[in-house]
Image: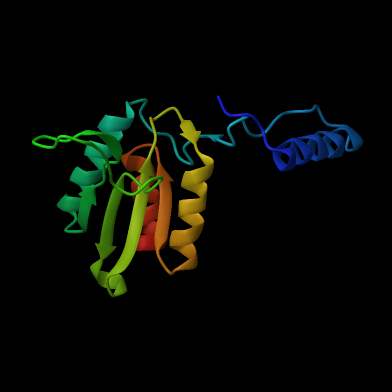
Length: 154
């Protein structure tokens, strides 16, 4: 596990002091590696991340929304004699474009139904996508995807 940087330690300590001054119980927001926990905004079935990703792709395609699953990793690829890295690091699990928004780019980061962890790099990717006019959401199941679709993507 990575060590906290000085800035992370300072922010953690500053948050704790603010909570003490406010008379609240001290709770740590993040983890040492900078990741934070996620929970669905609407009730979702407790399914694995792979099932959530497959269900969301199926739902998007059923609604005629162009999308592709995105994989990222590293290893020796078939037919190659060297170690390779593939995919876009920290990118969402599903990429697509919305026809009714002039081809606007979107990314969905899938997490298991009960919640998961969202890394510092994934949060940076979200800011980059949103700062450049795209949409980025963390989803824990189809009910949450429908929630975001109705409010932001339709």
